[in-house]
Amino acid sequence: MPGSNPGSRVPCSEKPLGEERLRKAIKLHIDISKRGGEWLPIADRIPIIDRRLAQPRMKSRRSISLLMTVVLTSSLAIVALLQLQQSNDVPELPAPERIAYFVHAPIFINGNAGFLADNMSTGVSWGSGTASDPYIIENWDIDAFTADGIRTQDTDVHFIIRNCRMLDGGSNYNGIYLSNCVNGRLESNFCLNCLYGLRLDNSNGNILSNNTCTSNRDGVHLTSSSDNALRNNTCNSNLDSGIYLYLSCNGNTLSNNTCDSNSAGMYVYVSSNDNTLNNNTCNSNGVGIYIGSSSGNMLMNNTCLANGGGIYLYSASNNNTLINNNCLGNSGSSSLGIYLFSSNDNLLSNNTCILNYNFGITFYASNSNTLFNNSCSNGGTGMRFDQSNNNTINNNTCGSNSANGIYLYQSRNNEIAGNWIGNNARYGVYIEIGRYNQIWNNSFVGNNGAGNTYDTAHVQAYDDRPYNHWNVSGYGNFWSDWTTPDNDMNGVVDNPYNISGLGEAKDYYPRTISEVTPIPEFSSSIVLLCAMVAMMAVVVTMRRVSPRKSQ
Image 1: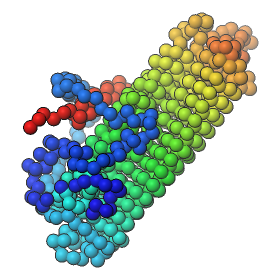
Image 2: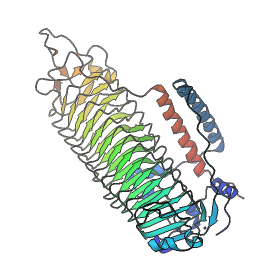
Image 3: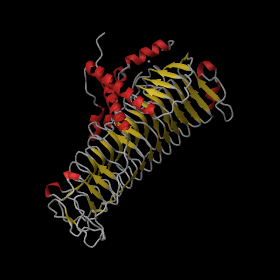
């Protein structure tokens, strides 16, 4: 129903829709923005720093062919490498069962009694949705040009909608729409070229699993819906978000979903709290995962590869936990692994942020956060803190970056301790206009071209103010170019280490032995995989924006 959609959007007839027509629809990759109506793309919901992320560049078909050849070659090489590491006894998986679809008009279920009407209107094929034995709607092929493909509202009985295919809702109509529903299950449905593939408004306690949503505005869109489980869904190549949670979507669990080649892979926005995002793959998007003005969320074991930015916590996103996420090879206009903007009291632990072009982890106006055991290497700068205070940076690895290991600008009262900071092209730690920061018990190894002996042209740290502390309670840092003499054998070099910069800072208690070891990083095969996915992202993007030939 047009009136059910936020803003004016568009429509698609009740013709048999077989495999041939589906292939044509996918081939055409219907441009839903040309069906009329003006949409506000996600690039305008992301703060201005991110707006360039969703603006792809034109390339020639020859470039596409060349890149696809390179991708194929890299894929074969990685497959061969992985096969060497696996057993030859892996059983062959059975071929997926082919689904027979039957054409049906759009379905509208209004209240529990709506399931009881005849099959021609409800599409119900009866039990077992359970508790006890309610309803199943399955195997329908629905053209959503004139209405939502399947809409259910104001129900609390158990039902399952599965193996249905919804096409061509355009900018007005959704594939499947639950409004004020509980106890629903959406399984193995396919939604192409709709407003939202799957939409939930004020609907709690539902399960969405194994659905495929592509070429919609959002693949899955939740508004004010809580305690739902979204798992094993594929939401690729949507105009805005793969999965979007908006306005008080609380306590949802998003696990094992794939959200690739969207403007944002997953977007959690405006007081959407206490959600769990676990083991999701968000590759080749403008932003992999975006948390905006939302708190208490848990992000674990997610992979954000080859995006413009990996994971963003934006604008009062406080008390979130990020553990064991992989943010690799992000090289778009922002090129960030993890970015915090005006967000406080978050925990970042055991995250891998390598091969990011600009920054592994960067903070702006973000305070009292804890960073523990993260790896930020082989990028531009490992960690950057801009106007960010009272953060704790412990036991991290910042190595082999093309600029600085850790950079502080106008930041105060941060503790940098127990980190391995090595082989960065510029300084291991660079402090500009910062005060009362404590830098101690770190290992500085081979930064700024430092060798085994101290050289004023290759000092490993920089500080332009005299107010920072490079040792605490008689405990300084290890400097690979300053390990002797230690005549009293107390583990402290007898002379202080001089820091570069106008602050004339010194480490008065430099250690003779390093007590910190770097975090092990990925194998070369994973690095190759990063490069391969990055090239694939370029190919997909260029194919999506390639101009069509005139008919």
